[in-house]
Image (cartoon, rainbow, N blue to C red; front, side, top):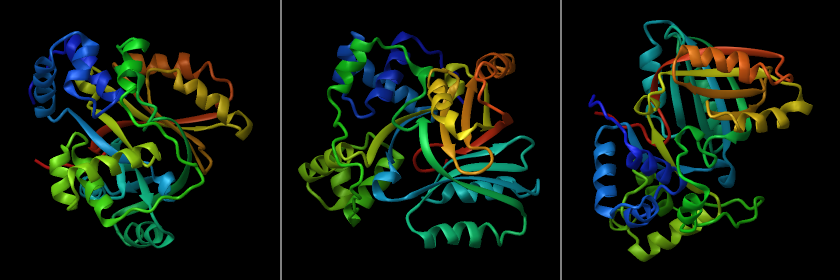
Length: 326
């Protein structure tokens, strides 16, 4: 893989794409004080490495989907193939190999009880090399998705506000459930592979006009059903240690503890789940020394955490968006 040395323009571009993944290169150039051609060249260079991409992500809660957090323990010879099979599914995200390569963690979005039972009670339960399955509902997210990883932050509040002014804002009633058409499904599939797919290409896959594509995308974004995530490999930013954490916190302290994690730049994801470990997090640190300091100092300062389990991420099979091969 090509070794990339990031400068201030690169880092500003990455943060700009986190703020608005479909911001035009000219708008980003205005914010960074450089030409749109320079921004475009930098984006194409970073995108070509496979270490950076913008992806369209569905917020399953706005569509009535169930979000689940799954852990599998497998035989050593089967973990990679099982993780890759999970990664190929359209309903999974953030598929990781953990610890010694015998454990897998992933998230899923299930549209119906039948889909949930097919995965949890059918496919996984009948896979003889899966030794144990733990599945819990994800009830609330503090960091992740719309609330991005703060490790990318370099732009000033004023620069961020200028970029955010071009985005659609969530306006719909949170209790209202949206329904997707076949055209929506085709558009979302394309955006899950490349969130910056042009309107002409989206029109081709949906059979709609470009103006219809633009209008429908704005509607889904404004309703909170679609957002754009800047997916970057932490190693590009010289973060070498990633881990999954499972914590037990008294229910009355979950909100305060989760809000405290939002302030930790090491936290890429944090959410509340069902089960005995009711607060889970994904951590990104420079190295093992920084991870140790995070555990002892930052987490150690949160008195409500009664128990913590950690597992290093040794390989990520699938991140946000669709899994890409080759």
